[in-house]
Each structure stands twice: as C-alpha cells, then as structure tokens.
Length: 594
Image 1 (cartoon, rainbow, N blue to C red):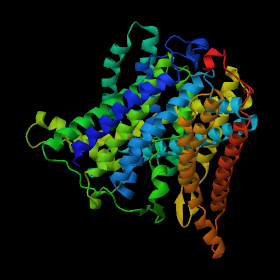
Image 2 (cartoon, rainbow, N blue to C red):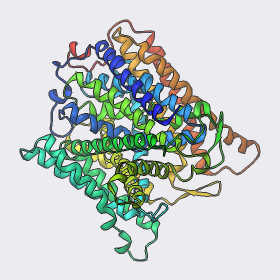
Image 3 (cartoon, helix red, strand yellow):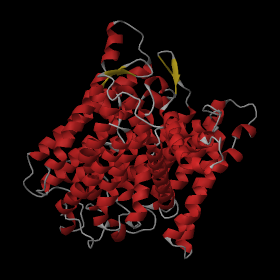
Image 4 (cartoon, one colour):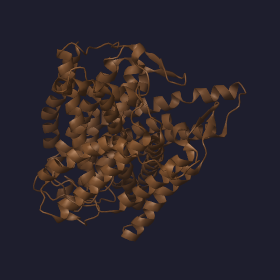
C-alpha cells in the first residue's frame, strides 16, 4: 500500500461510516431538531449557552483532541508498526469511540446536561454514582497536574530541534497571545455586530501571527528572576497557569471557552489541511513513501526497558483517535450544555470522533515516512518534523530557488503542538468543577468559586513537591503514574459505556450497541492493569527495595481493578431488576427521556 492510498482509504472509510452509521444512530435515538435542549431550558450565561453546530464542533474537537491523537498513534507505530495502530484507529473510532462519544452526549442531553455519572445514579445505584464521580474527579485533577507541568516545562525548555528552534519562552508568548485573541473574539462576538464568519476571517490569521511572533517576543521569566534554577522558574509558570485555569473556569463560556475552542478547532483544521495537501503533493512528486515496517512484532520495549505486549497495550497507547474515556467527560460536561439542537449530536459527537480518527491517521503518517533508524526523539519532534516536511512541499514553489523553509516550519509545528496541549487545561478545570459540584450537591456561583479552588488545590501542592526517585530516576510526580492513567482513561470509557448500556436497557432500546464495546474495553483495560502487578511482586519475592511511591502505585492499580469489578457487579444487580421505573429519574419530562 502506498502512502496516498493509505490516506484516501482512511478518509473513505471514515466518511462512509459517518454517512451510514451516523445516520443510523440519529434514527435509533430519535434525535429531534425541535425538542429543546438543556442549553435553552437552563440557559444561565455561565455554563449553559447554546452554540450552533458549526461553532460547537471545532470547540468540541479541540477539547477532545489536544495532543492525544498525535502522541498515541506515533508511539504505537514505533512500538508495533503502523499496521496495528491503523486498524485500531479505524475500527476503534468507527465502532467504539464514535458510539461512546455519541451516546455519552445524547444521554447527558436527555438528563438536563448532567454528567454520565448522573445517568449511573438514575439507573443503577447512588453508591455507583458516588464511585463514578470520585473516579472522574480524580482523573480530571490528574490531567490538570500533568498538563500544567508539561505546559510549564514547555515554557522554560531550552531551544530544541536540529537548528535550535522554538525555545520555551517563544511558546509562552504565542500561548498568551492566543488566549488574548480568544478573549477579544468572545467580546467582539458578544458586543459588536461582527458575525461568526467575519470573526474567523479576522482572528484565525491573527493566531498564525501570534505563533510566528513568539520567537520575536519571548516571554522569559529568567530575566525577571536572575539566578533562579530552571525548576524554580517552571514552578512559577505552574502557579501562573493555575491562576489562569481558575479564571478560565469561572468566566462565562461565551467569553473564553467557546471562542478559544473555535479558534483551536479551526486551527486544527488548517494544520490537517496543510498536512494532507502537502503529503499528497510530496507523494505524487516521489518525495514521500512508506519507509516504516507495517508490523514490527507482538512485543516491544518502552524507553525504560519494560516489556510491552501488543495485546492489550495497543488499545491503551492509542486512546484519543480510537476511543478515550476523557471524551465522555467533555461530551457530558461542556458540550451537552451548549448543544443547540439534538440533531447536532451526530456531527458534533460522532463526526467529531471520526475527525479525530483522521487526525490520528495523519499523525501516524509522520512516523510511517521514517525508517526505524530515523525514528528518533519524542512524538512531538517526529510530528513536527513530518508536518514541516508536508508544509514545505506546499510553499516551496512560491519561494526563491535554493530556499529551505524547513527550519521555520519545524518551529511552527512545535508551537502548534504546544498550543494543542495548552487548550486542554482550562476545559479540564471547568469539568472538574462540574463534577465536584455534582458530587456535593452545590449549585450557587459562590459554591462554584469554592469548588474551583478545591479542584486546583491538589495541582498546586503537586507543583510544590520535589521530583520523586523511582529506580534511580528523578521523575515529576505525575509521570510516576502516567501508565496507570492511560489504563484508567480507558477504564473510564468502559464504565461510561456500561452506564449508558444500563440506561438503554431501561428504555428498552438497542443496549447491545454499547454493551459489546463496554465488555471489550473492560477486558483490555483490566488486562493492562494486571500486567503492571508482576514487577511489584517480583521485587517483593526477591527482597528488593520497594520505594514508598511504588507501594502507592500498587494500591492505585488494585483500587482501579476493584472499582471496575464493583461497578460491573452493580450493573449486573441492576440488570436483574430492570422491570419497573428507574429510581432517581432526573429528566424533565418523559418525552425528553426517549
């Protein structure tokens, strides 16, 4: 198979799936353009605010994507070959991830815009609801911890790349300008006669200018803190980012979340378009071809030397782009509160997942064009190198002979990558606030402020803590639990599908649609968690030193497995009592719960 055939086949399958399966899902759930959604019924100007599908899709897409469909496919391609990664991206996004996202959004819309955990409470038990909410909240707080550290580290990193491009302060400048543009766009749309199309025509080029301007106006805190260690400067950036997260989570969605999401989403569209067109041009010109092996083997090694069996690690490595539990939090957290019409759930949720699948395929091509000996550096470097090469094919004909635009384009791609990661932070904070308020029953704006502060307290503590030594390696705290988080993210997908399955069974609808994906995701997730236990037991049997943090890892893994088993038991108990109305129904009318 050639590179062009790979891309065209991927696009054809995803497009056909949207037209066929997407239409089937819309009919099955009786989506109506006339039925009022929570965005209209509960409109408050803070969280509930209707947005057109053309406005909501890019916001939803940028929230669920971030760096996920870049890192996962590239790592899987390096570990196992591009063939297994491609199959999982295509089959996963069409048959599991798309259905997961779509049903999570529809279930939330039919339950007053509440989270998937609320559906669990209504159709299972209050105990299961509480467990689910605690699990979701912990996962969101972990994402805030990890992405705050990653983003702060990006802001202080030294120049990287073959030519010393894209120093951290340049990324900081571009990110700050990007957020300022989002605020300006929100205000312009709200208080002027500027229309959505005109706004995009003005602000999207300005986003490009912001990224290009970064290296010319580097925001370098070391100049304000002479003599400070890089780790100290990174901590300061971390606290600044948490202050931003607090503000972003409390301002109305029309002021930041919606315009930032639209700018980020359309910018993702542009990057994808440039990548696809450049790949096609370069392939037809004979510059690009598939160099990486389609299949490398059933086992691989991670950078630390740990064994990675293809089954089940492939399904954990590629999450965003195939199936990701985080998507259900976004769908039932922010997106359901902005859905203008029920019929928009098809393009926003199912279409958004397939769009992310195609983005993952494009990311996979950046490692496919490299021979194994060329696959060096992190996923961000490989992605930036590929996108820069693709973009160069488009602009070379317009440049003077002998000009090489790769260095500038490589910097541009790295800055884009950092911006994608940055987009996730404020959305996660707002989602964590929703979940905590739902858990404790808070509803007022004053309580929302307190809830947001509580959500950011643990990340603030994590920033202040020193690095942890694990087997002789000094790692930030979040990185110690990164592999566990990957499994917990997929466990969240399995539990979401399980909760939706019970809802559908209660409604006498086609529950098999989500039951078999729930079973599959539950199996591969628990399998991956069980694989993390033997190294711990081996150290224990051999009387080797087990550090305190490794005991915590063991407890978390066992707890996740216990949580999964517990909720499955709750679902089975509920299944046996499906006759009769559910307890704790939260829908406004019987018609809205169809």
